[in-house]
Length: 382
Image (cartoon, rainbow, N blue to C red; front, top):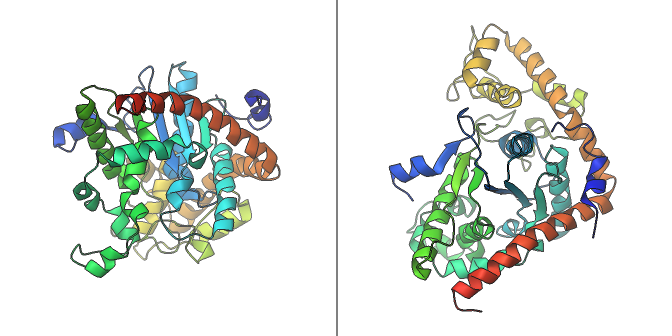
């Protein structure tokens, strides 16, 4: 058995320890709400696709939240589980360069750890290394109607389908892309997760997960699956530095549009200085419609400093745009210093990354195998 504590110690010496409106209110919780408390015996679960090393959007939009949850659970001594995974099976729903995907999986797992999610505090693993995910996917697909899947918006966006009457376009959609929300439901329900931190773009899939869980429970006449709550991430989407009408993306061909966690101070400041703002004179204001570039900077500062948009806007309202860029550059350089150091150290030792992934796999399978056995019993397979 691999030693988790010895494997982690050298990387963490510097780390601080239903669909109605009523149901929406009960199941959607905001992490920005200071009154929100993580309950005892919670199972907090989330994943991220393997697109390689993380850029600023991945970090502030997802993994920074995971880091905060780890610290909260650990510091408050809560008896709760934190489970985070690299969603590599989901990546197969769109065409891939498979040798590149293999490398991107490694970079994604290293990025999670480098960004402050300590494997001593959370289970971190590759989705594909736990076969129970696909076992439960098949069972849940037998409880999921095609109608509700057809209402999902993300597969239509990825398949460039805008009109349900476009038979030719619909006919070319692969089954995996159409039905991947069922696998997402399996990901969550396999661990009987109680809370799932996601952005707004994934909240629709959590609604489907709850409906599938309720359908399964009704079928077996038993409340086996817990109904997971959505923990809405407090950070708005981080946008492209050059085209702030769209989100920051690794696939953007313009290198000046994105900042990666491994970038040095010179590169970060250069990209921030060349970022698109606007020609509006006067005070700095937060207006995502009229001033997306400036508002993007305010979102970054809000996420890093864990302050409200209103507070940050008040702080920078008298800055010139150059002063704002200098301020944002300094904050990013300071924030990414440790993730960059950890990422570079991890990537020099792929064997160590593999060991950590195996530890996470074993921890995940210990839960998943027990739960899938019980589910098989409930549906008459055992």
